[in-house]
Length: 263
Image (cartoon, rainbow, N blue to C red; front, side, top):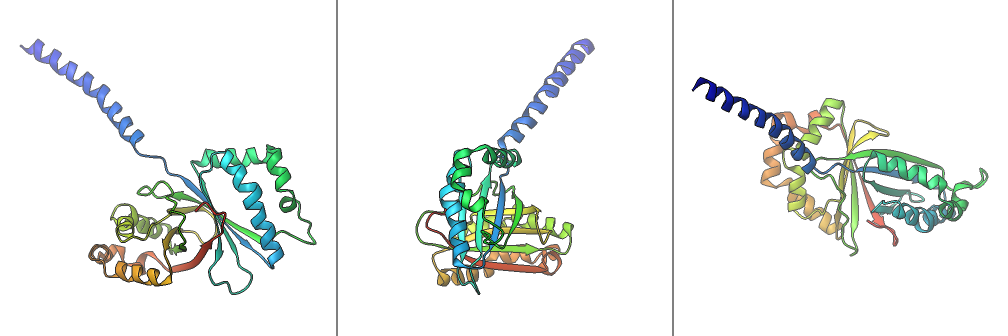
């Protein structure tokens, strides 16, 4: 009996040892990999620069990047610019490797280089733009893929939450991923486009996300509903999730998509 029990135990141990790693790998495989997003902000001086940059994206960059597997590129102007509008460009990549591959491929794409020539080779006496600010973001685990809204007329709000320290920044991300904050936005009809943690860029640590509305009246109504939502009140009432501890600056920019924007 002892020998029989030993053999049974050995078989079970061997089966368990082979099954558990397989189950673990299957679970990991079922989790979709997070996308990466590049956000470029062009500072422009005049309408000539704006046209040059917009023509570059419309006629050269978007078609070339789409050919290379970039599914969505959003190009936006400010809703109420104080001066010449800044141009916001959001680029979706499948992975860091995809980002690298696209960058390398564009340098060898003769069609792209030709169509982008006026932009790429603008002289110092007549630059295409004043400056580009660029950041690279990793999508949140609870929303690993960008969700582009329909083509109906909409306005977009780009929000950034800056934190005083990296632990605080991770804690704020935890609220979105693990405590259900992203689900509240979806349930209330904000039609979120993406959430991303800035891994390279200015003003770190920060997270950035984009939500959409029909108009400014709808925006006000949605944020009012969010502030009074029972689930949000429950999450935000937890002492360790107090905004005073996790967020020290919030910026909000209202944007309008260009006619050729893919978001």
